[in-house]
Image (cartoon, rainbow, N blue to C red):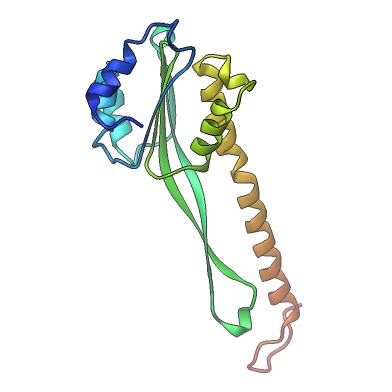
Length: 185
């Protein structure tokens, strides 16, 4: 839980013997701590601009020996009830997008989430548990785990949309309009 850019700089200079895996995660600061962290790790100014711009499109930049930059939009499903008795069981479903930025360099992973993420909590728990792979591997494994967990979150959302579409189809095909018109089916 870093609060200042000086703490970020101090962390950067730990030797490999002092840290097998370095993970600096910044959540919800909207640039307040992002910029000092990125500058402390000498991230290229063009990548800093991309990371600070929430509307940036997804991309992967392989910098060879100098690292890797990944930007993507994490997806969150928000549901609200319609409140219409004719459409009982249907919800308004919206996807909210939230940029996630990952910078991998020198066995250090910098991650930036604009809002709290279950993925971060899962990774923290995994690191804290003795005997897990994250306790003995480098930052590449953590990078993989973050992306994997974010992708895994998509499948339940797709299933919810499929179920909602099935309900809409059933309503359209089985209920008669109140105007007394013919059944659509």
